Length: 115
Length: 238
Image 1 (cartoon, rainbow over the protein chains, first blue to last red):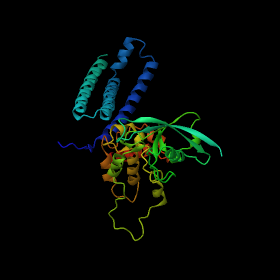
Image 2: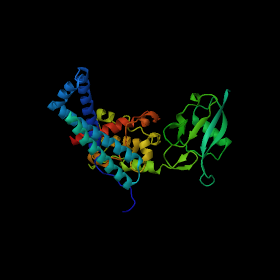
Image 3: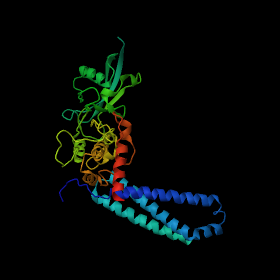
Image 4: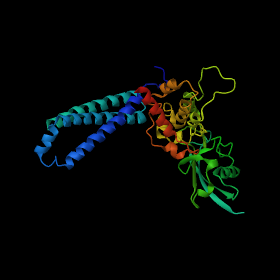
């Protein structure tokens, strides 16, 4: 491959938009959870368990976890793009970040849904 | 006539003579007719004629005397001497992030390459009218705050994203100019211009830290222009 600087990947907008959308979704989830906790759902394990077993809470928690991981992916990838110059190292870091985040998403969903 | 002694610490580096850069202590006496930093620099040149810096119009129009003054980018010809505290040396360095040619002179090639990459000219394939392509006053209003850029590079060289990805990120000055043509109702290449910028490096390295707005000697707002480009991309997509 010739050593030329190439740009024009045409995907920046999607990630930029995703980062903002996931931030809004996470803020909404945290707001709902804060209200729930203030209203006393965390006062006993049974109440907490019942609350977390609602279908909509499971749905919202899953959306939150996916949003968090997607948000982190865009942010961490930005750091690699800013500071890592070697293409090979950058690709390796991208793959590792994705693997870790997919693993975390699966594990977190499993833990939350098991409550 | 009231005089004042100004102490300077100036970045010196002549690749033909110096092994590495160093800061030179030098003082110059200015009087009440010397109002701007550029006046002091011109007097400094009389004290030590080996100091190299760029200057031309001396009134904030040409943008050639952009420097890093006490850690902040600005134009020497627009910086008031009276604002410098007494007894503290004034630190003068070249604009950060660009290769040094000599002393306070930087190599602007990459900066202008990025500027040229956004095609900074009107693209309109219609036959030219007899006199001029007219705009409504409202459409013309859109260009205010965009066309005034003097390409001094204060903004781009204050941007960490530009330092890290000089060869890929267009930078605030280039993006401000890009929006100047995207916003121009006479331009017919809006889609091509947006395509040209839709890239994780060219536009989206901007993390909205607003250093560019903070240092712009003309009071322009590249961050706002960058935000408008992103808005246009979103409205084009959804």
